[in-house]
Length: 456
Image 1 (cartoon, rainbow, N blue to C red):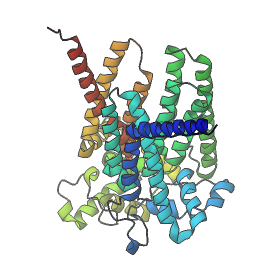
Image 2: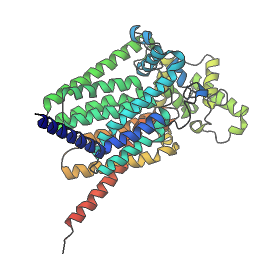
Image 3: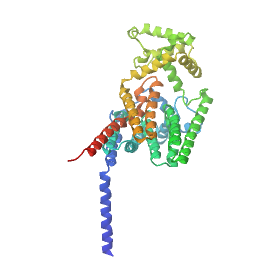
């Protein structure tokens, strides 16, 4: 009996040693350990310096709006909508204020963002396994995502960028996991995830169309799981209904059917940047023209070749010409209410569509940091067509991957007045995969050629 017990213990020890060896050989374990160091402990800009009271970067003009309205009880139970910010990040910051108090909330927000960012590394690795055949490429791509300076920095900001990156990766993982093994839970998470992402950041609104494209393509071209795909489509409809419900509440308060007024405000500023008002003869356009003339007289050193699109990056009035123009219009009582501002902006764009299209193209050319992303987007398109030709099947997830990158980038640049790189940050994890897809194809090509080479 005692000998049998000793044998069982020996087998148990061997089994434990075997599991430990398998764990040590798993590259994901080492990747997550490295990620823990970079995402949890490294503080690249010293934002958590005790001398700064643990407060992360507060200099962005967007930060105060995420703090002043972060009252958790009002957000959850009043039924009121915030006209500037969608509720997801306000609830996130409000929860930390409720749990940890006003002074300690900053450090805990940063900690939570870092932990969620760390979790996203695991999901990124799994996405890499789907898109890349080589284990080496998967590991290298994930390590690049781990040490990406942009992601590390924004984990320390009271802005939506950190959660936008982490949640976008998690949402795409749910979509990928459904493609691999369809279940109702994954379909539900994919649908609900779109709603949560839009409530976090309105720039994700394009994902609502994308999720319908995904289910439509599966129902039309890949009918193996028709019933489950149909259920997934119904969950997408549920997200659409929830978005419409929020827009209806917003309309009752503002008269605008939207999730935020910032879209209207940004489009109005973009219209001023495009200088379409120089061609128009309405009272507000004439006032803008005279305001621009006044600005050039007050700041003659900036008058030469002043283009509002490439104005000096200054936030304060009166140095910034955009702020100068809008302030003058406001002082004269000509600044229209938000809904009329939207109508005025749309009229100007419809009247001068070619000029506005040239302006939008100029915005894409202005931001030099985005040029590598443009190259990678075109590269991914070639890879998709190559995969399509090889497999003779439409690579639906690859198309969604490409459309998501292109759509989010277009929204970030065309719909914003500046800070295009920061606003396009959610595309960075997915763009990281593209050069490694090229490397993966090249490695597989070399391997195939070596296998086909005749031997003596």
